Amino acid sequence: MTKARISKIKIETKLAIIREALTELKHLSKIPKNDFLSDKKNFAVAEHYLRRALEAIFDIAGHIVSRYPMTPGKRPSTYKDLAISLAEKNIVDDDFGNNILTKMAGYRNRMVHFYDEITGEEMFGILQEKLDDIDRFASAVVSVLKQPESFNLVVDDN
Image (cartoon, rainbow, N blue to C red; front, side, top):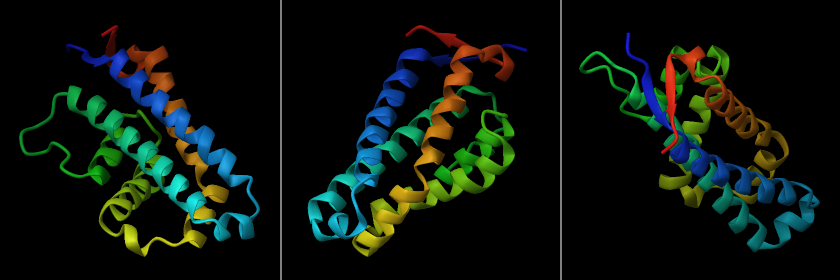
């Protein structure tokens, strides 16, 4: 069976976006709650970097999953489908892909389509409780780049 080819440059570019976003989000997570909520700029910056991180996550997911051969009509059509496909390909473990990553996909959609419903309290909660999930995804992708053969992949340097 031919191994699927993934682009190191594409993935590393998106990982850099995730790392930058995480740096900013972790900085914001250290702001006391009342201070975070009292300055609307904190919310705006957190929203921006969280959305960028989620977009980069699903760009990476789409890139990897699209490289595997699939039965016609079975290609993932949503971000949640991409999360599940990553678990099916053992890129991430089942619980992470089917639960945490699918919730991240749903939240990405909420940020894009229902952005006006997201509150400062909600964003602060994410900063306090969910940033490790982004780190966990990035670590899984780094493992793929380091040992692509374990995932029936080949890494192209372009």
